[in-house]
Picture 1: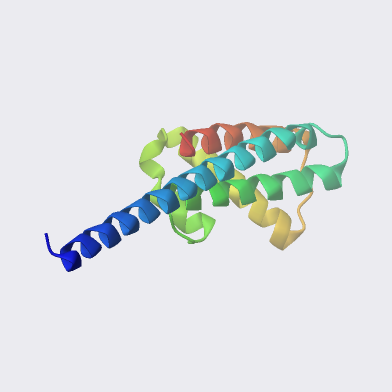
Picture 2: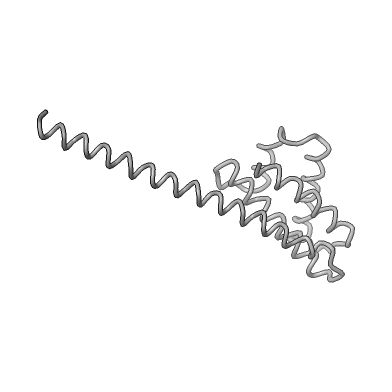
Length: 138
């Protein structure tokens, strides 16, 4: 066999090995990202059940941020949360999807209208975000 052919084959094999190494690393990083989102979600549970109004407001905002990141993770894009919610409607029953939109709108009212969040609203928001994020990250 000609030396040029052997060198070409070795270069192609080396490129293939490098590609496999890089893609394996990306898969591990995606798994770490998913784990971080789920851990953050669990850590926010106490905030949803807090007596402190500021903590409840902060919790709902952070839950929506995790939702946004989980949607971007699942859909491999960088679109806004509302845009991505429209793309995943088929993953949910209609009532679940409507509740998720209500939770997202609650977050928007907190941020834009300085809305106070009751304990019940924060707890319900946590429940729907928790269910939705777990389903999205499946």
